[in-house]
Length: 144
Image 1 (tube, rainbow, N blue to C red):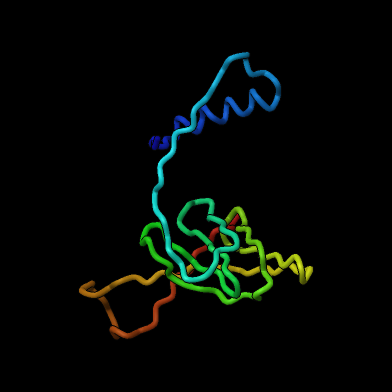
Image 2: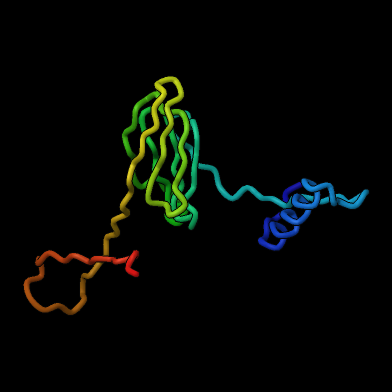
């Protein structure tokens, strides 16, 4: 039977898991898990591992020889990153700016730095100067 998920259920489930792990669960208490299938993505290659950014904007799908960058908002693979075919697991840093790729048989760990570039459509916007002038936007996140 399919059931819809909710953040409230996540909190309840977390509390039950906490109680169960520490042996504080009252006898006879039972919790159900609510779920529903949100989507299915068909890809050409065999998925080996998957990781998601903390903000949920990106899903990284490891396949033999590449990482697919999936955008849930666009419901599409928007880019690919070539990687060694021996890579067998992937993890995303908490800030979402690095991918960690492990190759167990090759005994290596690779780190890929990510910078997401966004295209901004400015057609029809007012401007001063040449229309084809380069524009750079700098973001300072770590100032103190």
